[in-house]
Image 1 (spheres, rainbow, N blue to C red):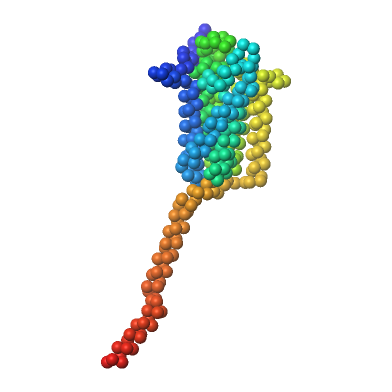
Image 2 (cartoon, rainbow, N blue to C red; image 1 turned 135 degrees about the vertical axis):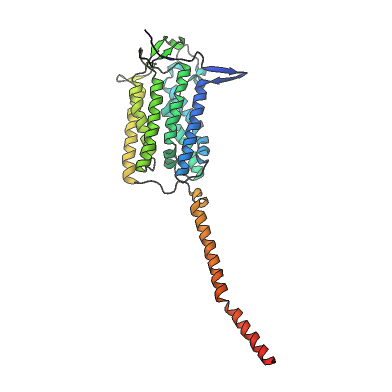
Length: 320
């Protein structure tokens, strides 16, 4: 008997005149704004300029969307290129299907291009953005709720999600809401990175690496609960293996980076230093030094002026 459950939306899109508002896209857009907003605050706190995070995100976000979609299509090619499927559906990103692994990889390439153009170290920018990315993922997972996808095994727990759609092989019923589990986990990852960054002053990409490692740890057990179609290797889903490999790489990076480059970057945006308090203080110091010299000259008098005064007094004495 179903005493309680999380209902699924009856529709994943709302028509506002001729414009369709899709829940999946709406969640992704909100997530991007969350990431940029928090990343901007953290970047300013590190000594950077306001707006720099958004400028680089203009490069990172499109690259990330393309990378996320490519990873999904490549790893689930049978959904688009097998017999009876329409390959055009591979371009319908609004219907769901973004792989975080591809999004981070290609999004990182876009961010690198943006950082190079601004003369900013990519690891420092990634550290500032790390908890914001986790929050963006937390928000984006609710897009799966709108699409009634990525749920887990059947359950009668009171927080189960009720699936009502029978499209694409779905069987209506109540299931583990793995999208909710991952959303809550990502919020926890964001809080962990913020705390660790304040406590240990993480730098040179280690805050970002901590986000990656923590996310992979949660993604591994959540992925094991999902029942959607996926490729398996040695009895485990492909994304479980990916989570293990990426987790190990992130931990290895943190260890090696801490040994080779301990501490945190002193300057993350050189242009901001010239415009900031330090530059103002230097200019103020130069003005003060100039004023002090003028005052000393006024008090002591110019030697040439003194000689002129003596000459005038001598000529006056001769006339008298």
